[in-house]
Length: 385
Image (cartoon, rainbow, N blue to C red; front, side, top):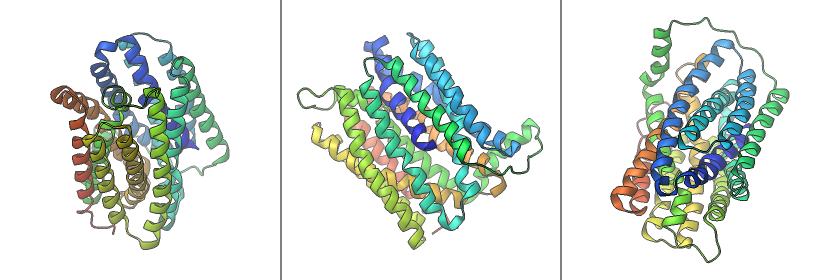
């Protein structure tokens, strides 16, 4: 439920409402403005995730941070929906990213905190279902409120705040020993120490490359349907995003469940991660070679199969290469830089590729190449099969 609400907000806001709001404010410069807003706000995501993780480690608690971040997100999206300039949209989305990454950092630590190693594939698959289900709900709600995005923002914020309240009420936790505060210099060194671990470093790079390729395409999906794809008569781009997300999610649900279960059964994480990343890369070739609506549907289905399995199994793999179990939240927060960090680069990379090539075809090839590199990055990992 926690992941479902989180990805509902991320996809519905970042993938639909934010793009529509920016287009409404300045239609002529929508590509550049979306890149600017997404890039600056992702800096907040990158900073707040490991910081919040370290703070929850120090406090010995996760639930208060989940609840606080969820409630704060309700207020920040309410602010976001009430503004009408690119500057204020940037500020509102930055504050939302900060609140959501406090929530996410603590929530991500639940699996390594509370689930035995031999069950983490299935647990990660269960948690991973929040991605396709939340993405579908986000796209559908975003499309439904495309003409009233202020209301849509409030619905997304209420979902996250409600999920945080339910989770912290029913998922009770045992308080862990609190940690003494470290000087700032040692805190910064602690953040980077995880990357000194060979296997964790390669897991980090692999995740960063795949997410970069994924978000380079996803962040411009609405504009791709507006300016690249030959849509059937009467199909609005916002509705097209919802349909593609539904198709993507159907494939993702199947591969998330099967990938998590099979990776536990055969004790093979690297194989499933590499194959699923290659699958996601192949999916991007179809819309690169064709501007048809059918090509986008095929892309959505195949990309869902690949990305769903990747996220489920890679999450399980990462929990097995954490340098220190007592620093799980902090190190998972460092890893989450591989989720948030590429979003800093992705909109700028995508914008430059689109402007340099005069269209979106090259963007799909760049996304495919990055996914291939992500697949190859798991090979050097030594301690996990």
